[in-house]
Image (cartoon, rainbow, N blue to C red; front, top):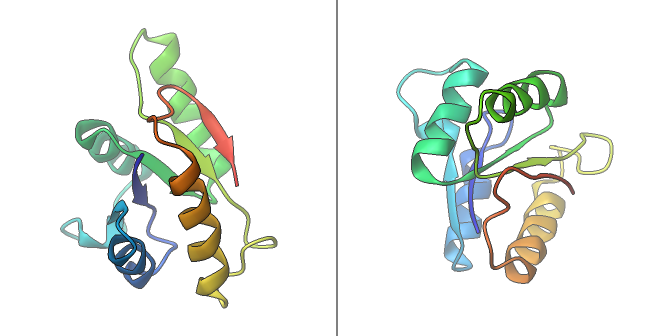
Length: 114
């Protein structure tokens, strides 16, 4: 599975996942900080990546709108700050590493919760 980490996550998380052999990218590497969520999702779709984000309020409606319009996305993986605190990046790295090892197929049009 290929993923794109939303801007709330440090680029170091994507780098560590890459060092573990995963195809992980960071929205921080998109030109300009503060990229709108619809553009993050468009980038993920163009690259065939699932978006990893805590931002359910924005990404869920965007993903649903694509499906209603007859379009597709490569999955959305939602997390929570409470379960995976950003102050402890090792916990989200471990959780994503395990998910990526266990999930070989891209979750097309699916919403997953980590």
